[in-house]
Image 1 (cartoon, rainbow, N blue to C red):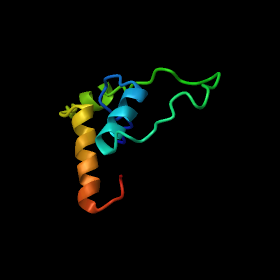
Image 2 (image 1 turned 90 degrees about the vertical axis):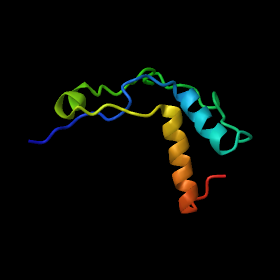
Image 3 (image 1 turned 90 degrees about the horizontal axis):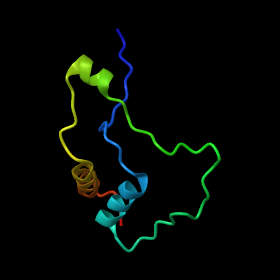
Length: 85
């Protein structure tokens, strides 16, 4: 049986806050350009992964915060020598 489900934290995160956290942990002097492109008329303004199907099927639940995930991802890329700055 194939299980198709969403993967995420199940908690809302404002995209602006996520991008700002990412930038702040790489180089807080980088410009972000928020507001430079207007929203489309059909722009999705609220989207959160519903992880209930995955949790029910496997018992999986997120164990780390978004902030910790960002930090771990950045450190992983730095250890690999990927250009981030």
